[in-house]
Length: 282
Image (cartoon, rainbow, N blue to C red; front, side):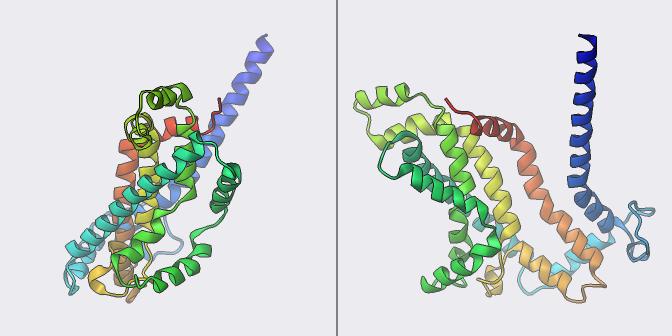
């Protein structure tokens, strides 16, 4: 018994060590970006680079704000575009993913499993693979250089649909059947019974989609400066004389990371709950 406990403690310690190592590996890029943004120019271009800052400064942030203020489109416009596109795309994705997940989870129809398998295949493809088909579709719909060029590709996501479907499957069938027997219309069953019971899943999908859209907005479909987003504007600033403005580019990267991190911190409890349910089956 004592030997088993000892082995169990060693195993748990090894798992904890691996998790800490993985966490440090994932956090290192964030730490490095923050440190680089706080280094003065003489430290920034030192070789070999240090993993710490001796004399921290905010000069690169000041330079970034100065560069942004000199652009002919105000920074507030870029920020408005980003929030509009991100929130609209996220909300529309949740609406459509939920409406698609409900019949897949609670209705039996021919080809349901095959359709869901096709949807899951979408998890195998990265954005670079689907960019060209998305561009062609947007161009054919005459949506290039509009907000919809940003929003439409963000509406569909296999991951969001999968998470919501798995959560809906945990709702007892008896609860839904009782509502139908009482004469409740199907749309009311969905909005009044299903939706309130899948709030953790909805909030989790909101986080994932918000971060995905915020970080993944592309500049190829929109060329009107008035419609561009913060990410594209910061890329333009740091791309001009990129070597001399490396510190400003790092400062911009730090600022871009703040909103997704804040959203995740505020809703992280729902992520854990949803991931737990996603792996469960009755």
